[in-house]
Image (cartoon, rainbow, N blue to C red; front, side, top):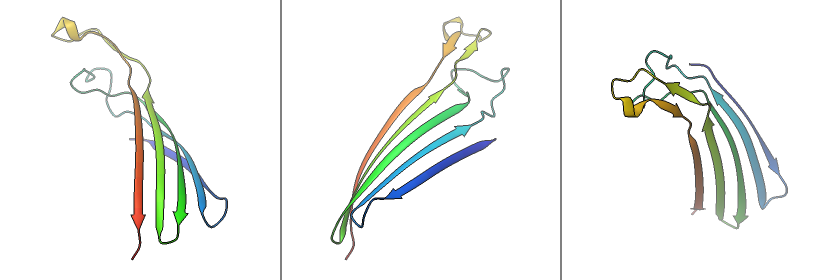
Length: 100
């Protein structure tokens, strides 16, 4: 599996940090083995994050968007599974950390 990622972090001041990243992953699933039960397509991703420090605590926010290229299947034993598949995933995270 080939995978590439790139990210940057920017510290505005002692209280604020921002992050961003890109990712790409080549699918290991070939056209013969692809099925709705074993999905596989090249994946692309974009993410952003923000951290705000409050004394001994930190509040983190992150968002990631993942998507795949379209994959078509026409030879599944179950005809209803034949078609074109695309994936879109939105991930949102909020985290509070407290050091003591």
